[in-house]
Image (cartoon, rainbow, N blue to C red):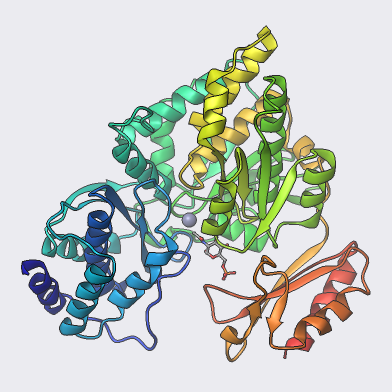
Length: 539
Ligand code: 16G
Ligand code: ZN
């Protein structure tokens, strides 16, 4: 047919750049140096058309971003009609398309997908696109559009947006004719939804001091400035730093959530100006992650990471459920990965008395597990996360008749939270408003937040290995137990048992050619010792 021919021809305009190893659609989609990506973009456009045709012409999202990576990188990921990430079973098609070496091979992969997935090419295909502030985005959009046009896809380019805004738009578009639309399908609709939910939640709380936001010199900066126009002025004062998006090379440079988390220190403005107890947070380059921090009275840097945000949100929402009189109907759980600090897990189970489930690393794993619960709170320690409300929980909240003014207030707040929190993906803007609202309700400073539990000393190390694929973790172990290379796990267990509260695991990175070693124990010198020995047992 005409599309097959056009797909084949598209290749001629965007030849595959010479690369030393095959592309792979991983946890973050495709991500690499921007100058290698044009051809990949073309194939992603072609794939998105098939995905939309397969899913009854629902709208598919395409986000062009490389998140916290340096400015010269870029990347692309697909968003499914519900606003979730691309279903895992389709990732191999993305990989196959991107690795087709010649026009004929791309055409063959295309036909293969149509046949295997039983796709009707006469169906309409709908796609929306957005991108972060990276300069290469302009050029890459053109390659993407070539793929969309080759396949007769109807598309809308939303220009600049944060990753979570694109997820919001996809879900809003696909639910607009349903009984419960997700929100108005526009960027303004996003701000209106968050702004009005925040206003409702804050009716019952007093302002709680200023927040300074490091926007990583990325897309979060202009979008936060826009969002502020929709927030109640008297309830929250926001100062913005690192908003220089016109200087592309500053993106994520010594600032942003990833820098702060991995370096365990604030950006320059923080180091130079922050007074003890001042509340700061950092977004990453596409504003889907957030990390809080402050200096204590001894000028020691204190990080309030994803584990802290999860515990804060879970404790507040758990209380609201109880106060609203819904605790028999609505069950709450927290989903973590093996990287969550053991002290946070203990705090959730023993103090908050909530269930904790541990999954493999990667947002999609956490998201899917959280979606099974009435209310599922999930965060990775790196600051990516959200809270999911199951339709049955939403219904219970909607239908519940309050028995007292206190129940009414709790119920109102809970309802507003279901709108305030982005249900599609972790969202720095939405998570920021959630944290601010909870701190205001609890009348907590960052110091009080930090006092809820004490992190166990921990260390994360990276070991370069010849072949990371030989490090395989046991199914169902949430990556905490190696089953290959044989015998290694027994050696690790032998080392770890010597340390009080010791915990250590080894897993292959999904994003780098290395294995990661995480360890924690009651004492910092024990952690150092334990991790050093485990590393020795690997090499
Ligand atoms: C990806 C994941 C992130 C995870 C990281 C682990 C998404 C969107 N991103 O960046 O959640 O923490 O990989 O990297 O899923 P690693 O496998 O190299 O340790
Ligand atoms: Zn990101």
